Length: 249
Length: 75
Image (cartoon, rainbow over all chains, first blue to last red; front, side, top):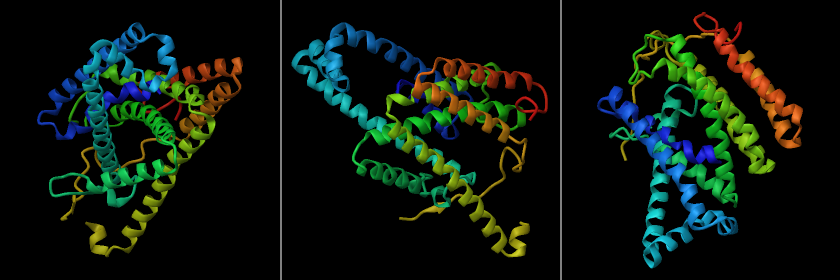
């Protein structure tokens, strides 16, 4: 859960292809986001524990920031609560932007449903965003938001492991390929160590959600394999049904 | 609302190509994941130790394969 909450700064690289100077701006985006997260996630627990106290936090950890803002800012603490709500909306926005672009690219690469690569005239992957919203609404209709948290945590950690390994393998396979951003080799190698750490977190942290939720989360994640096979079959069928001239092109 | 589909262009990474058979590594990770799950579910100390050893072995596989056309150990 901590990894799911704290790592999210890497979402800034999702927009690398849209940066004006990716080689310069990607490093700036990832390091400034990471620095901010490191500072605030490091400072937050100490301030919270020091001001609110352990007993109060244990009463209801999900609302522990409310007594903190009231203790520090008094009645004007309500303004901070409003700001926290705005921040929550921004995080939803970020999640939809990041995941829809990921789905869009996955669709272009032939991994997921074909309709997700459709974009608006401004280049916004609207159908991928729509799928994102509908899928999350379905999860919410199940009745407990814990499904969304558990499913997203398992999926997120699985992809963190696979992405870090993929980054290493890509550097070996296509060292000379054109890239928007060229990460230092040391970081690419360190990625394997971080992948191993995330792999351990993925399984050891599972009981915190409860096995029922983890089972459903894995089912959702593994359903991606079914979708991949369906897309591969669908692509093959399209190629076979295309005219001979079109296939040659 | 008008929508467009981006035309498929040339992949900057070159044509799709099978670099190596990654199934042995994926299978290995599934086994290690099962060991970790057992450790977390039953709280067996030996399973935690075994999980750590197997995970360390997985990382070692990349070091062994460095600067070679192989990917992970011999695959």
